[in-house]
Image (cartoon, rainbow, N blue to C red; front, side, top):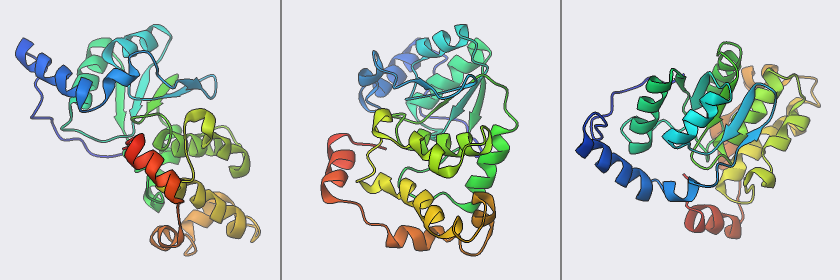
Length: 227
């Protein structure tokens, strides 16, 4: 789990500070797009994945039994985090920060950390990134594998178009990570965890050999402006 620094640009303890924070959140974080669309999916009886929630949406999830909120974005000096942290404190929700990237092969430490995370938090839980598509997707694959006992092949369904994940762009490096295991680790008789722990797991090398398609890059990076 990542460390946390105290936000200093956004003060939600004053009316003026809250106004500034909400204005930044609404426009710079594209939060207006998420007022009526949460990209929320219960992937088990204990975990829902979603895009970045508004404070009032966190209150909704609290009423539906959520105990823990997993923030995959980092962003500890951002408007979304200032609002989320304050809302979780007010609602009595446990906020856990576990920062991952949408265009990087997960590090060995991140994979092992995800296994530990899913075995230690209080459920039911909500897990989110910005759009609920890519970082929520890769972590959902790891959740389904480590917590629910699904094979990697089965768990990869979490990186699908129904969740708005586009594998043809640079975010496809997440799919590529698991595809490399299915092509190399599984035929060698290694479990996914054994493969990740072995010298064969090379995030830098895997990213260097991945190639996204031009139209996918344009869609995810320029049109959808995925984080």
